[in-house]
Image (cartoon, rainbow, N blue to C red; front, side, top):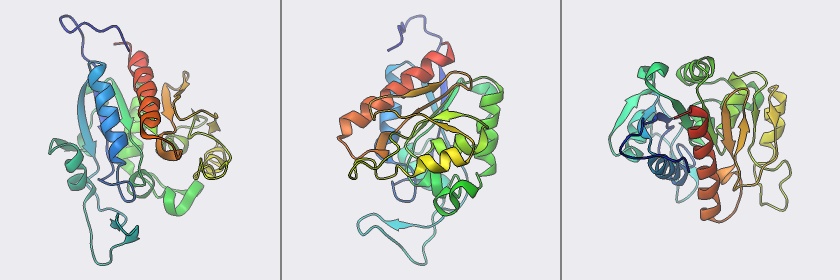
Length: 237
């Protein structure tokens, strides 16, 4: 934890980019909440954003199946997590923020990009791409967890990220194949445990596996805490 004093702190203004609400078609809610808790403990002020676009599809989270003839908006769904305080991603200006963090959930691969369908040949939402490039060009830290590091791998050439281990290991790392797509995109993948964060100091990109690992919730929470603390350190606040 950074040595912050409430009476004289210069608050970090951090932006968080959501992709809907619910792991299978939007933002992973536990990850989003963990990020907010750790940012709050670190003394950061947070503004949440999401693109004003339709979801790729809607998933019945009880059945794990697509719902036919239903459409939802990413910005409106993200407002559920933000308790209504959400802004269109098109309005995010890098000059007003010290860092940006992307939670995971399949929304990152379905709504913020087409990675779920196209893999290494995916396209990234234009506003997401703009935000990543703007923060990178400004030398401001970028945090990503779970599947969202693929966004950085696609947009930032040669970036070094982690999504955990590179073998499934009997189902503990069910999405280990993602590492192959990351390297195919020209990025580097570094193996890390779920409780760890990986820091690409050159690009100021911090990543952690989160729910890429089948494990206990508190371990995922700890890994996200490591990511947030490293983002705060890189911000220099």
